[in-house]
Image 1 (tube, helix red, strand yellow):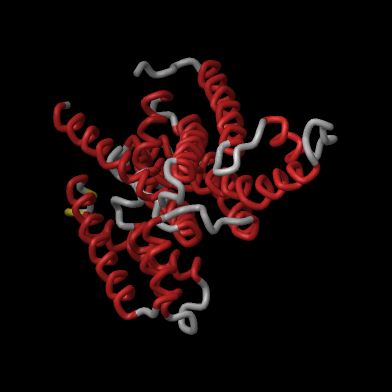
Image 2 (cartoon, helix red, strand yellow):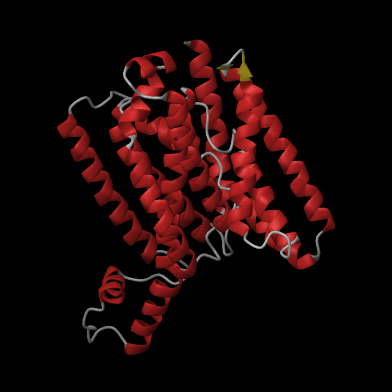
Length: 340
């Protein structure tokens, strides 16, 4: 895929992709066990005057489906897609490796363990999101410290350390599943599979004030991420403290990932596939790669969520679909890097 080099072309692509996200959201609101027309969708969203051709009972049902079921899922998918894609872009930029993402680093497993602890022991871990963030942050610190060799982070060591730490926390989650009661077990299984089927406006009101500003601030620091991606020595020569900025950016990425896992469960591979695709299209400039990743992450999760709701009579957990798509993509990246 040829990279777009002109800034004007990049801005046009971002605008075109924003329109694509809007169209995809409309299609997602239409399709479901109860199909709606575009007319009904627009009338429900914008409270337009009802056509005489549309029965009152059907219009009220359309409003209920849009506002209480489908629109919250779409907005939540956009927030989570943005959070996971932006965090993946940050991790790949800080560690200068396109194979790094929250799931591979063990961040998702650590956050899932924190969420599981809050579910099983609610009197000790009173806040599920805080518990998820604490354990995901610990996971990052352990993984990075294990991957350091003589002060340098080795790529293979980083991936192996992430896999090992992720497996360790996954084992701890299995222990919690074994000792938990039926209600807690069902709730833990929800986090492990991932999905938006319990998402509502309450979750959106909690996530949006954090995910959107943090993602915007990371975008604002995209020029620093560009310098950090070149190398520590080069960053120091340009007046940028690589250690300080890396820690802050990693903190932001961990916060975005842990919040997503805490509310919708583990949705793997988004942070791997989406940033890599964005850089293939835009190049390494994070000032454009970050917003493109956010839009692609939103589009990808909207597509997966629409499939999850419509492929079968019930609903497929969205984490299963992203894993099916993500595992072959990781093998493709590994083979590409090995060949080069």
